[in-house]
Length: 254
Length: 254
Image (spheres, rainbow over the protein chains, first blue to last red):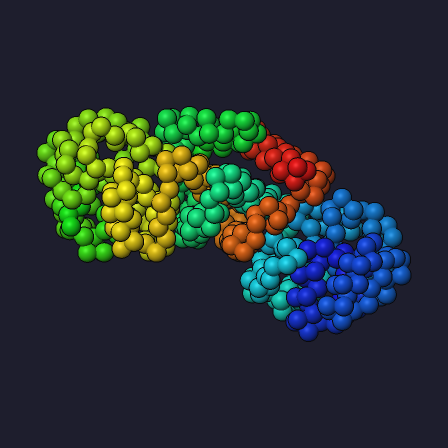
């Protein structure tokens, strides 16, 4: 089975390697940035190109690019008979409708950075197809890559993606703020790793709501005031502190 | 060496058990709630009491209660000659000054819930003493409990505690929001666990700033607008979404 990719960013890179390692034949990598396309192509033994209209017919074409750019890219792809999927959590299946005979969504619910290795067999793959047959075909392909495959419709996928932004992207930003606070004091960020690890270990076995700790849920006003004083000079972090503390209190007084 | 505790909450419970397991003789547990004091006392083979003025002289008295209550509790403790420490990240050493001959701080940088087991040997212990001799004594005790012991002054400890609120308490609240979004769709929270695990794995080897992902850092306006639309009816979570997205953008345009 042949597979081509449109895109050469974090998601495209990890997915192309996962397909390649699972024994799929990667045909082409198409990206507007020739160097990126060439780099990824060389890693999965594929050809590279920059012109979408030159893509060769293929069994599965995977479009893995910024959501904002999907619509424009679709208008340039001429492969009406290939099975075409996008990998976006936030974009509906319907964006592909009318342009291809067979289409679907192949959304990996994971955060990918180019230089970090991810065990793809543990990545939840959320699958949607334009019809029963296509869905089954995509589920079958997904099952060769990961042990966690779920059929998810466009509406649920958007909500999953939203939850992922809160629990991954926003969480990482809180880690950035923590690291900056320590950096200012010349304290190593490593000191926080056991705490962060335990925060995550807890929610693997308990409902996050049941293991909330800290001054906000205790309504420890003295501590919260002293923290806001420490954040003097950084009104943005003060605002985040106040808003998240208020939200914790509201959540637990429901 | 004998150790007594004032308090029977999450931190007191985990610390008393850690001292007990390390071979210390736990003498008394004092708490205003008799049942909690009795429960913890029974677990560490100690006596329990509710009246602070009845505490027996002891080698080390550990005060582990809400920050707001420390001052009041101190006025009732009559053990001028015992070594007395508190376990608070947010309270300065000086709160104990003038009340005891020897005093210090024994701050475990970890999140404790009563029903979760914590490997205490990995908990960073932040130590401060009123003088050189006391500091050394506390460092020696701490080293019998944990492999991660650091001398930290009151100012640095407050900043550490502030960073801990961002990276643990606020992070857990984002997990709560994620779980609520999925609950509404009848999707299992377990789907997010690989993502959350990977988010933390990344920052064990990389600077959190260097591994930020998501629509905010890509400035993917279309996705952010659709997320805000999904949050319609929950102005608080919309406000959190807007504020954290703005903060991510500001951090990365510095």
